[in-house]
Image 1: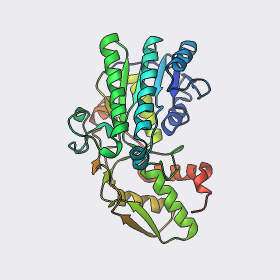
Image 2: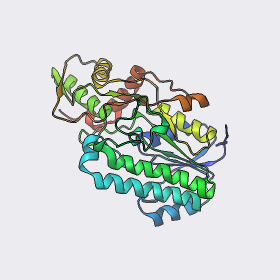
Image 3: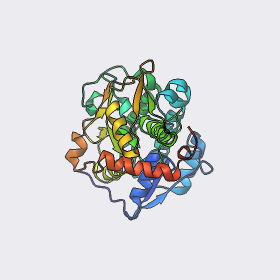
Amino acid sequence: MSTFDIKGKRVWVAGHRGMVGSAVVRRLAGSGAEVIVAGRADADLVRQDQVESWMAKSRPQAVVLAAARVGGIVANDTRPAEFIYENLMIEANVIHAAWKTGVDKLLFLGSTCIYPRLAPQPLNEDALLTGPLEPTNEWYAIAKIAGIKLCQAYRKQHGARFIAAMPTNLYGPHDNFDLKHSHVVGALMVKIHRAKQSGARSVEIWGTGTPKREFLHVDDCADACVFLLQNYDAADIVNIGVGTDMTIREFAETLAKVIGWSGEFVYDRAKPDGTPRKLVDTGRINGLGWRARIGLEDGLRDAYAWFLANAPEAKSAA
């Protein structure tokens, strides 16, 4: 196992305001690394000239590329050009500039939506490019697959120590709670919270409630990112997950328990379910010595506490 000591290194967390990036910044606190960040005023990551100029001046020695245009089914399905263009540009600009400026190590964060819609479960890393993607988020997935291939290409041609990890469904502090653009955890948290506040006895959920999903707290994801940055150096991608899943119905019931709401869920079967199941095979990262530690109920309590204290949606009326 190849090691990379981050102590004393200048580590750029790209996307530091997002859910994953902010968690990586928290995780790096006290690690001995010097964390550096770039706001939009410093460098628009979609602009190649700005990225190259900023990196040439700042000279990071390691990069965690967590910056991305992200969203749920509605956002992906209604803004496909935005999702594929911005994600392609961000990853291409940062990865190329990292090689050009001599970055020692780079971790690119993808997503488990890269895998074929009907790939065998649990999703093994070798399933990449073996079948058609889920149509509702294929634009984002194709961009993320391109990012993986960029890392592999720069390793092959230039010997760059660029690696790629695929986190499963994430939740936690700094999640997106906009109902038009959020993922399932953020959207359901807002809906159930508002039902509790208003005394509503029912909450609508898109689809049938039968698709199965895996849920990873973002602090576990950040811990895995730092672990891989320090301990992994190969072209093969690595899944980050908990290794267990549940139906959307079971998840909604668990979240309702955490929030303290006891109403009924109504399923809008006219809306899309998305991928039927998405559980990742965590054998590769577990074999390296890393496992998730935060249980779902504990993680959701932490996420809900952050939501109540920080999210505008927690204060707005239903």
